[in-house]
Image (tube, rainbow, N blue to C red; front, side):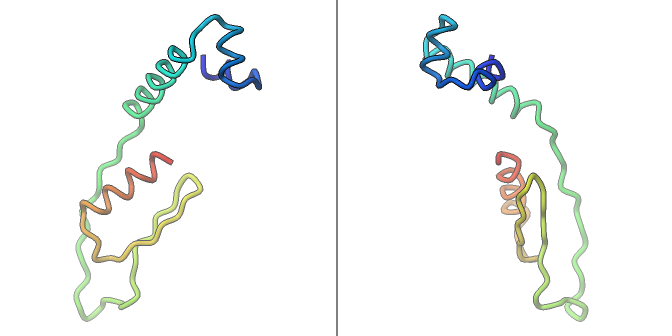
Length: 93
C-alpha cells in the first residue's frame, strides 16, 4: 500500500480518495507497517570489550560509529546504557 502511494506522486488526501480508503485507515496501516519494520529490524548485541590501562590510554580517545549516512563520536568512558541508546537512535534514522 505505502509503495503504491509513494509511486503515485499524489498527496495522502488525493491518494486515499482515489483508492477508497479514509485518511485514518491510511495512517493506521502506515503505523502498522512501521511497527512491523521495527520488530523485524536486525538486532545487534553489544560486544564487551576490555579497557586499556591508564598508561596506554590516549586522552583524546573516542568511539566512532558510522552507518546509514550518520556518524557519531562518543567518549570512551560512555556508559553501556548510553551507548545502547545511541545505537538504537541511529537505527531509527
